[in-house]
Amino acid sequence: MADKAPGVPAAASSSEWSHSFWACCSPVDKCLCACLFPCCLFGRTQSRLQNPAEKPSSFNGMCCGWCCLSMVGCSCILQGLQRGRMRDQYGINGSTFMDFFASCCCPCCGLLQEEKEAVARIESSGYQPPQGMVYP
Image (cartoon, rainbow, N blue to C red; front, top):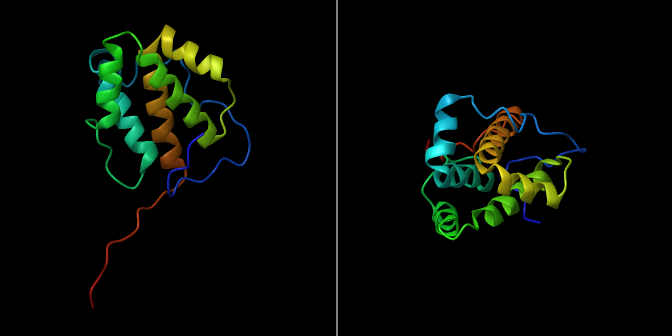
């Protein structure tokens, strides 16, 4: 679907989500963010996926897009697409139907699962951002 983020290794084989869809009450700070400011959590996760080397930004174009679509009840479209890209990027088992089903039925649980998955995959890959230029 989408290009893989630089520095994030492609998955060698299919796998499962490392966090349960229903484990959405911890950590509490991210749970509250998913419930009260879902557009910000969506934007942060998207930022992590696009460039794991940089500190993730919560307020970006994807955050605004999610917010605008939520006003007409269609944020699940953008969230389902991101979920599918994440599955492709990390080789997670699933289907497009389940991506959209999860995004429509319980968007907060889906957002939190996606954020925790992105953090876990980036940390487990041992990603090291490139060092800055050093002058002699």
